[in-house]
Amino acid sequence: MRSDSVTKGMQQAPHRSLFNALGLTEEELSRPLVGIASSYNEIVPGHMNLDKIVNAVKTGVSMAGGTPIVFPAIAVCDGIAMGHVGMKYSLVTRDLIADSTEAMAMAHAFDALVMVPNCDKNVPGLLMAAARLNIPTVFVSGGPMLAGRVKGEKRSLSSMFEAVGSYAAGTMTEEDVREFEDNVCPTCGSCSGMYTANSMNCLTEVLGMGLRGNGTIPAVYSDRILLAKHAGMQVMELWRANICPRDIMTEDAFMNALTVDMALGCSTNSMLHLPAIAHEAGVELNVDIANEISAKTPNLCHLAPAGPTYMEDLNAAGGVYAVMNELSKKNLLHMDCMTVTLKTVGENIASCKNKNPDVIRPVENPYSETGGIAILKGNLAPDSGVVKRSAVAEEMLVHEGPARVFDCEEDAIHAITHGRIVAGDVVVIRYEGPKGGPGMREMLNPTSAIAGMGLGSSVALITDGRFSGASRGASIGHVSPEAAVGGPIALVEEGDIIKINIPENRLDVDISEEEMEARRARWEPREPKVTKGYLARYASMVTSGNRGAILEIQK
Image (tube, rainbow, N blue to C red; front, side, top):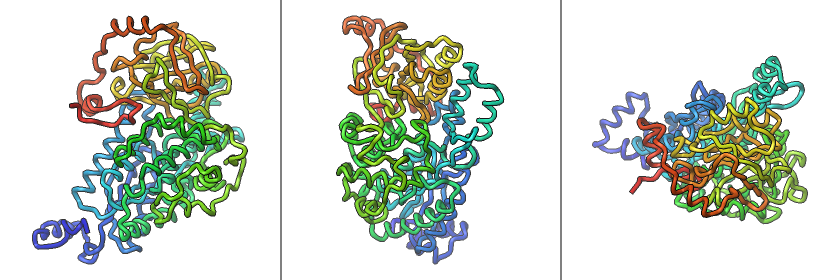
């Protein structure tokens, strides 16, 4: 066992004395040591219940013959971090989580791991760590929040942000906003729509790293506790079989994840996280392939913010496996991929039926014949930009309009809420990329303000930052190269005509190449916004959004 290096032999007598200090018995030390990465904290609503999940995992591990040992992983609430300096610290935690988990697992010689994540960067961070460490690992998330109810309709956090925009537009009273405030987040759990957290927890299932229901069983259901116990038991089966994350997270598994991503209409952040996880697994995942997959993958779900259904509805309809079963009818999945169940994808999904065709459209009757995410290119985004096309109004799939240029999120929000943005405009927010932010902030506040002002079907937003999974509308993010490194988005001027053609995967600014070169010659790099601390170190190492904003040592 890996743990023999800290439990066996005379040289390890000092180590055993420290285990004695922890109250571990000789019998416990003779078993495999299973590290449980607990993301429990009291600041993230999606994590406040993870102590119960962790306790259930411990029970499962013990029942199956292992010794569970809990250690912490951090997590940021993107909702609370939104719209201020805190959002600079969201994406950057993904790599902190991966690094700190690697450090804990290596320092203490765990034989296996159970990862207990839930919200946004916590999930990909732990998946990156799992791929990097490559020891038997199972994931079990904390589960999604139940939808809130306002005036008899299901609502979620995206409704709350849009309510603020409606108030600014004068179409909603303070009392109306308060009703949303009091009711849209009624339980613990990751926010109830197909936002980033739930997207990544669902894709964990697809990758084969979580058991059935990992992405969809609501946080407050007893089934979530049962799932956690089974995860604890299953990691011991993986340990006995010596099946490790890289045996599961293969190139074919990532193709499956991209395919289901398209069918579910996941957050655009999946286009950052999947390449980063793949990189750690030794798989080169170029986001350009997303369009190829999208072209043959029907969009089967319109979960909030794209539509009126929520994670609890997807769970009741059969969950992720039911979606995969639908896709299998068109031979769109690699069915022989190994999973943590020790069965293949095909074996896992064989009996999983679609119980509600209003929530999961049959492949014969999709929302669209193409997938929920599109990768755009053009002279404004030579490397790429990303849009959640399933959440774009039909009339905005093709759009031309004048650029309204802002060098930070705050200036854009002020212009939107003070009526300076009108129908037809294209809001450009730059210097918010991985290096320029630094940290690639989410633009949920401006997209919600646009929607709340009644401009969601007439105004587009383009940024080298990124979006929350709760964003909807013609919101094009991850524009690469970013402004901070002299990408074309840095050269856009007020009034330039921006041309968006999502069906043709194009994003262009209507100026000549000669004019572009003249502007490039005049452009000068901005002074870094942050010059010390973790953000400065991050900015010095981070790569472009089209590469997943992975960290590389500069040579």
